[in-house]
Structure formats: C-alpha cells, structure tokens
Image (cartoon, rainbow, N blue to C red):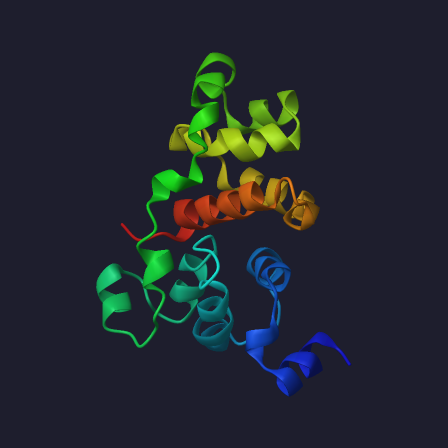
Amino acid sequence: LGAIDKVSSKGYSLLTYEDIFSFYLNGGTYDTRLVLKNTIFQLSKRTPYLPIYKFMRDVGINSLDDYKSSDYDLDKIVNTDHEKYKIKNYESQFEKSAKGKTLEEIIIKYPPEKILIYVPFMDRSLIDPNILKNFLIENSHMIKSQVYSSNYKKLVCFYDLLVYGWD
C-alpha cells in the first residue's frame, strides 16, 4: 500500500509528526483540511510545536479573525507564545558569537545543531526564508533524533510563523 492508500484506509489521525513535517516542507497529496482537522488536532494534544499557518492559508484562513470564525480547534497552537521557539539558555552564546550575522553566514560557520538554536534569536531581516527552508529540508532527519527533534520542530514552526504567520 502507498501512503495515499494507508491514509484512505486508516484515516488521517494515524499520520505521524514525521509525515506532517514532510508534507509541510515537501508538499504532497494529503487533504489539507483533513490534516488540520484530524492529524494536527490529534498531535497537538501532545505538543504545540506543529506548523499550521501555511496549512491554514491553504484553506483560506488568513488572519486570527478568520481562524476564530472557522470550525478548527487549534487554540493550543495558535495561542503558543512564540518566544518559546527560543531556548533561553543559549541566548548569551548567540549574542557573543552569532548576533548580526546572516543566516547564510551562520550556516557556513556552525553545525546544524547550533543553527536550530540560533535562528530564532536572529533579526528577521538577516534570515532568507528560502535558505532556511532548504536548511530544514536538508536536515529533516533531525526530527527523528531524541536529542534534536524538539529543536527541529520549533525551528520549522518558527519558519512557518516567519513566512506564513498572521500580522
């Protein structure tokens, strides 16, 4: 059975974090409405770190008002404090070694594990969204890491907010 058959026969609630993050970054043939209603809703019971803004825009939800008048129940994610994408213990390290650098410079200088931590502290004007998306795709294996999975998910959510978030 292919992925489509698996989803058709077992339902969207069986998709995993890896499935959702892959669909988010690489596209695919899942029904975005069902992903939001079933999969992300189920997964959000365990974590608020799921990308939703791109998916919401795909179904015509382009603002908080649109969301409030929709029938989606993703308040746990929508109301997440975006400061939580930052790992505060690393703020001074970022300030000393990477502040003021572009994303491209940071990617050249630091290992992927540091980039996951540093990017949310960066000035938005120094982040090229295309470079960040490519970094996330190239390092998608990190979602399976017990050590780096949480940081990877946070950075994908940060990217989602940066590119697709509501004003």
